[in-house]
Image (tube, rainbow, N blue to C red; front, top):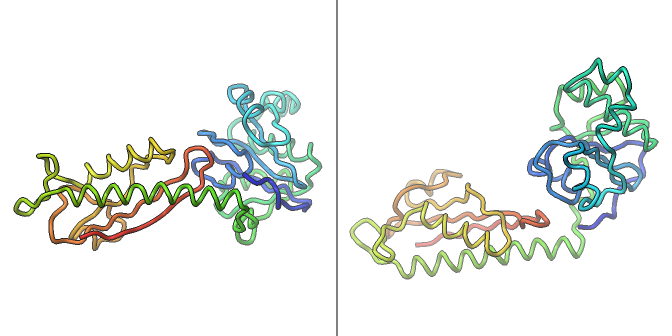
Length: 254
């Protein structure tokens, strides 16, 4: 993951989210974290705040220039921390960490948690970014482009598997049979998920394999038997497990 192309603004560009829900949080940390955590960029350096449970993991595996200990920051807040909990305490910790890096202001994305935004405004100037918080992420490095290609190459393997299974299936009345069993959206989805897992993509549960009337319902996942002589929409999308770059393709079969 490329660490270049950050800004030298006086703002600290801040996230508070898990990496599963925020591409910006993953961009800063460079590693997966299932729980929401404080992360920000300031003057071309990346920072995170981690609890004792995650501190070693962040120090070893994140790409942050500095990882603050949550407990140490709480101690530095002194009596103030003992009077606070929840969102107000998080806002105070963010403010302290940002000021330690020399940041005078904070910038957040439009989907930043509202209650935390309001608490931060009491402690440090905060503004909502116009457009993307990390607009530079739109321009992909050679490494990033290659990761996207990797993800789509695995999707291409998955579509080849779908084509093979449909080709091998036999028509029996209004159903398709494969290996003596009815071929269903759920069954085909499981085979694709298994391929994803084996090849390094996240085996997502919401892949779309929908036929007939279901294929006419946008974003219907599809369920039940796949029928002959009907269009089957297959929409596959998933990130690489390691680097989180996505592939996304849709194909229609008959």
